Length: 326
Ligand SMILES: Nc1ncnc2c1ncn2[C@@H]1O[C@H](COP(=O)(O)OP(=O)(O)O)[C@@H](O)[C@H]1O
Ligand SMILES: [Mg+2]
Image 1 (tube, rainbow, N blue to C red):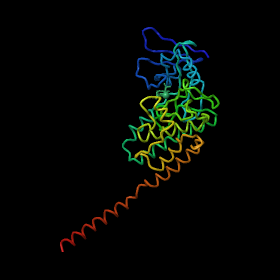
Image 2 (tube, rainbow, N blue to C red):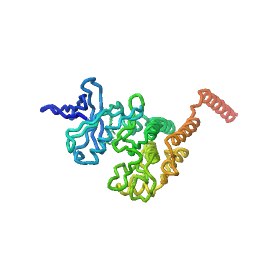
Image 3 (spheres, rainbow, N blue to C red):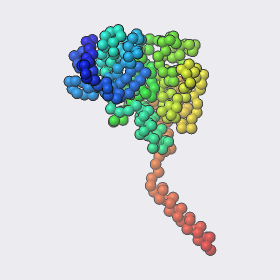
Image 4 (cartoon, protein in one colour):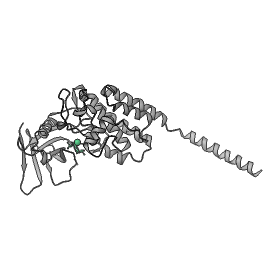
């Protein structure tokens, strides 16, 4: 792959060449977002002027062999699914320790987490939950697609889910996704996010189950719990404590969660993979059942119901008043 990085002296623009195409961004502008491995900037395709997202791998990681491998892997995974961010390519200053950039489709939107906080905060509790669950089903659709291809995401969490201006939910950050058969087996190589890591992701757990689709579904269950309740059920003061909680702590009940939904999330986050939903489709069916139930309970009553109640209330009050006066 032909790549190049050009910085003009005296300018804050960085030009990146990927194969025959050029992209650019201004490193002095406020980034779109930041993650553990990279800083994401708004960039442009120099030819079409279309907006792109440019993730610059943090300088402290460009010497790290694993990070370079995972960035190359992320850039090589080009998926065509409406709910998965589309990757355009990779640009490396040099092969060993130079700057690295991953160029992908720009998502004009916000993280799903911030959408819930800012756009759904004035809905009633049930309406809010119904919206979160309905929109998040799009991520299960993305997982059905990836799992059918034999790919695991392995880092499902709120900050890796975005929602765009037409309310399309997108799964981002496929940096550590990989084929089912490649198993990480030592704690040193653990690179997921402890707060969402299923027990079988934790090498020293003694759990012999393979890391598979059910591992992503566990993380999806924790993510949904966190989006609704506002807190992560397994977070500890340190990473070790969090991983310990993943192995030993059962999912805590929460007043924000209707019983039916809690039961679904409890099954999704069972410690033993055999007790969880086995596929994204199975998980999705359970959520659809919940949505039908929640919406039927939350049905808006027709206006005549309110009018009748008011009329009978007034008549009742008049009768009472007459009785008191007589
Ligand atoms: N394609 C994109 N379009 C717009 N913003 C993005 C895009 N990708 C990532 N971001 C923003 O950058 C943040 C970090 O990106 P992410 O890919 O998760 O980085 P990391 O690999 O370091 O975790 C995201 O939470 C989001 O706010
Ligand atoms: Mg991320």
